[in-house]
Amino acid sequence: MKRPFVFFDLDGTLYDFPGCAAVALKATLARAQEELGCPDEHLPALQAAFWQAYFHYLKRESSPGDPRAALEEVLTRTFAACRAGQARLSPHFGRELSGTWLRAFFAALAPFPGVRPLLEELRAAGVILGVVSNGTRPFQVAKLRRLGLKVYFPGRNLFFSGDGGGAKPDPAIFHRALSALHLAPAAGVFVGDSPRTDLAGGLQAGLRVVWLNRYGLPAPEEVRGKIHVVTSFPAAARAVWALLHQEEGG
View (cartoon, rainbow, N blue to C red):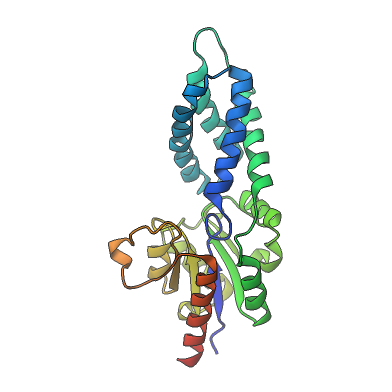
């Protein structure tokens, strides 16, 4: 008998990553103003610069390395524009700002409504639970612990791009998870939020994919008609159960 399973993405799927990052950026901007005296009119440009640099940070986080060091670099580059006149950045400025960012980010972490009840129900039903996420293991596990969700995911069921063996959307990371847990792809479901990284890889690995599309984005052409689209986590929970029962009936 095939063992049913559900894999989840982490950032943006189990919690509000953009919201937490925005809170962290606000705290970091306030700290930078204290240090550098950046005028208020510069803040929109700094926010834009941060997000542009942060995309590079996310790419680096997908491979082995220290995400905090990458974040320090991002923040230093972002706020270098405030060095007008004679102002100077201290050698430890990036480290101080990354500490501010991370403290605010982790303080803001909370699961989306409906996440914990679904995980409880799935676990009680004997469904295998796992996480497939781009990021480094220490950083991502720290998020799960802060969210209070680590209890649902044994360490052997956590698969991160930072461990090597591919990063989403490469299906290799899904194949690695399936092989490690001896699972048949047709027996499982993957839930993710990113149209760029979560959809195609899961499909190519043979999983049924639930797209948590909170912002009403258009589906990429290559996955249209092949995925299950929902706009909230409670709707995702209903889709997951329907797909699992469909497999049982099949």
